[in-house]
Length: 454
View: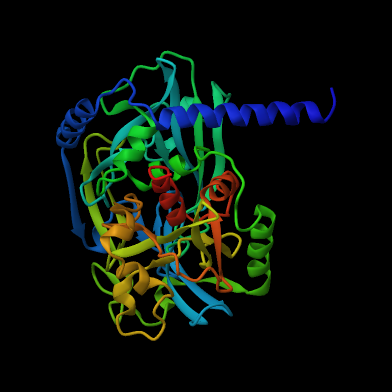
């Protein structure tokens, strides 16, 4: 067998997968929309849920490290909250310190797929997370940290986990390790995986088979499709391949490598109690000016989870964010403007991010107002192609929400790109997200949203 044979077979397999996903993206499937609405209402009302704020000393199974003040789980697993000192020569602020969530485990975000009536369907879950504004959101088939699926909590097993770990039981359509919020997590990563099965898989009452197109359409509903489902969805090679990009993918990779090489960002762990300008009260760790976020503790009751009750700390953003792509057609091909953004929690320093990614309230009186923010916020309704408020990770953040927008710019908008920005096609983003640490989690959400547009 020559070297070229498996490469040709792999290419053929890629094209087959893309065609099957595109068909699923344009199909209704076996679950009518009204059936989904009935199921969703039933599952949202079915469980007994409560999330109550408590003082730090009421956390069970957690402790404050005597030397550092870091918040740690007694098992040494799950996650911890410590301090981080950051220095960089990129951007307007060269030095700061902050609390940070450290979770070195690689979790599993998995969607089980199956052909029903010749069309790929995704097994989606109605899952409660304590930080969700509406508690229950549409989630992947499996959404679990390593501590969860190895049952450190001594709870019930994770349903359908066997399809994603151990000996492979199906055809792998997607498999990549992706980062999460680099401003709040230190090097947090999850395995994004889609496995197609030919087995007969009964759906538990908390699960429902939906086509890719149905899930994509649900992205237009506020706070319905959770972050973990969105990131797996973004990794699916739905976009059609084609020519016409302003820059070749090789040029884009070289530009990103140049940004990563030219600028530095060092992040050093420091004791949580030594983070300057942050204060600790009985039930909150907060910044003196009340900007950005705080750390709070909650008690959770959820009878549909593997463990029916627990306590934990959560990161609480103080404002709603904005994540937006500026979009335009260049030589007839849809392009979006991405930025190379450095955040202290990224493994490789910089990743591709939305044109705008910020909390506008933090810049109301600042000379460091983000580039293009005013163009996004001032866009008329005729130029807004997508506009939905979606929640971020509900297992670690409390009521963290971003307004996700795709804004079409007028024909006279400058094509010239600032140093940290490039115009990319949806195809290019789809190709890059198949690999690790190129496209950040906010841009991946927008990529999933773009599938409903082009």
